[in-house]
Image 1: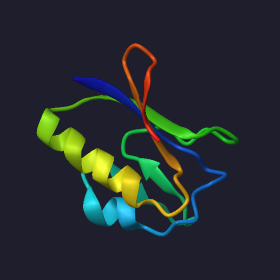
Image 2 (image 1 turned 45 degrees about the vertical axis):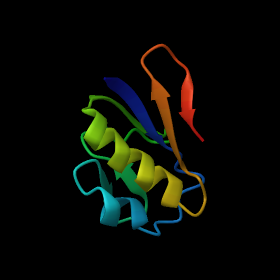
Image 3 (image 1 turned 90 degrees about the horizontal axis):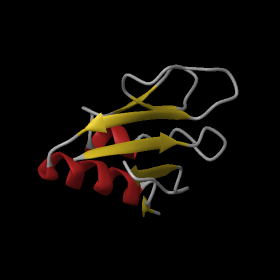
Image 4 (image 1 turned 120 degrees about the horizontal axis):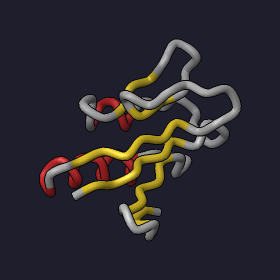
Length: 85
């Protein structure tokens, strides 16, 4: 399964729950914003990355997205359908 995970920088408050739940895919940076691991930090753009993922790992990414208090994390399938939120 391949999904795109997006962290909206404008919504992220650096709560860190995503990193606590799934440190394999999320990290909070020094500036207090969470990002998808392996994503590039391009000024003014959201952190996003396509990742190949197992169904078990998908559950962790989804749990992390659901626990974000500002719903800053979106999950999109490879055909462009939004899976969350």
